[in-house]
Length: 373
Image (cartoon, rainbow, N blue to C red; front, top):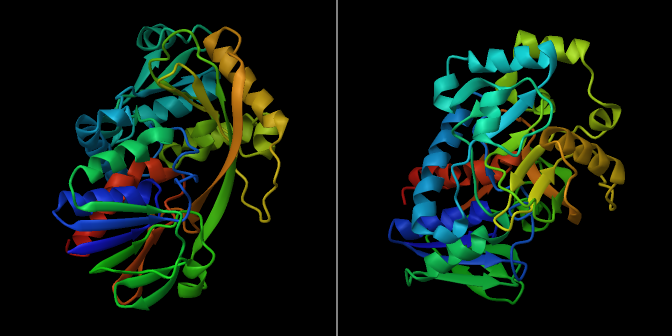
């Protein structure tokens, strides 16, 4: 079988991985010289802890298994089974963490409510003030800015993979065949459009009423911390954002303990992961209304820096990079991904939202199974 994958981000690359792993030939086409969208502009978190139950959690757990297996084959991914800690302060935040740790699926997620002393044994860099923390053993991380490069290097070694950058696919010309902006036609037994947040052009022509929206976020990265941050770190505002934490305790938190005004205005939470060079990737905000602003705002960065410093008990290293990114999210946020046959031999796979990095291996595996690869 010959598979054409359109899109060089993590969802597209994982579809290429599944096809090559199953013995097929793959041509992957990317409109940029390298993928530059949400697949690079993220935390690199394999984030099981906040996922909704049912299909979403099952997908995240399966993806976590696949990431670990692929990471063993491709060391350059930088896969690290680091887990996560969400420090809490006060009775209301503690009650939400306690409710999460008491969920029926808490063991599958790796949840445990730990004391501040236990949390500091897990992550000694957390010297600031907090009273307890929700530990999630199943969370992990990879290096987002280089993951696709190392995956493609491993795919090329198979002898059945070709990467064609700098080409935008413009047209479906026949069953399993597309034409790019160079005029070249690429024919396969199946075409997977994994265009990420690029929802105009061909995607709009094929699905004018696509039930997917775009979401913009701001993030930053610091100079090296100078010590190991042994887990990823979230704050209690993440309880408000992720569906796994829904409970009466969360309702009480929302009703009785407001977010800081800047956090509420920008729909913020803290997520933080250490990169291989020692720097910290920190975010994030959420903007849903179009057209998106073209500039980045300083207030959210200042808020996040203050939250991080309160957990670390020390000044944040110098911020070296600030950026914004856009990802595609199903308008029905309970759906893991939008997967649709849009022409004969052509399937569109998009809209995983902030779950793309986490769930992409399992999303691609499901596509491969459904298409009979």
